[in-house]
Image 1 (cartoon, rainbow, N blue to C red):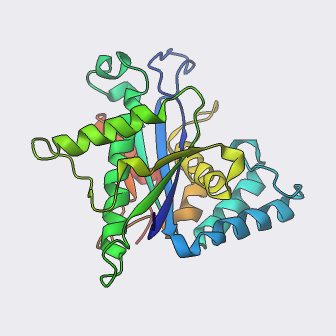
Image 2 (image 1 turned 90 degrees about the horizontal axis):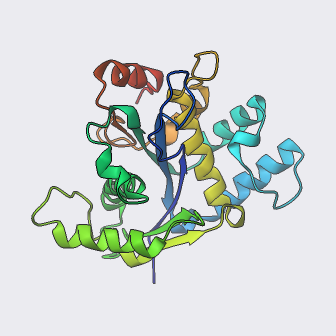
Length: 262
């Protein structure tokens, strides 16, 4: 199948709902991010990952894991991603403020599926708005997820198919001329440079809202990636950065933490 775009997708955080007062237990946030580019520019991710390995003194084909890098290496990699001709979309979900968490605890990966829905809505808008008008199928996007060994991607495809069939009755805003559920693929993190860079994007967004053990967040990485954040009419909020956070004070704080000027 011919694709106009490719989206590499990875997450940071977990889907658990066990929150202890001392901050332990499940992560308070889960972030799902996509690194999106024209298919013809796909080799750029290989080039950037290779340059990063050389800069860090890593062997060829050594898989990059953002969490395993030192701070100065993360800064360098985030800067390199920020200079790419790609776009990024991140969905940030604050789990403690979800009003009815039991809706996501009854079936495995249902929160991941819902975050995928929010992510793919925005990926579809991005690709739709930038496809070449003279090519009817130029906007079609290849969806490559970082493989989660315990998760069924057939279940994810079926979920997307159900969303498509429900689109007329429910407020589902995925542009189906761009997203084809059968195009969902799962590849191991270490196999594709694009997934390793998507991991850096997701983890950067996660660190920007998740305090460390001293109560401090680290938003520098996301700011360095900022040039790639998808904007619509100059606006990143709700597009390249989609928050799902019912706690208004925390939401305002999170927005300030990831404030990126157009």
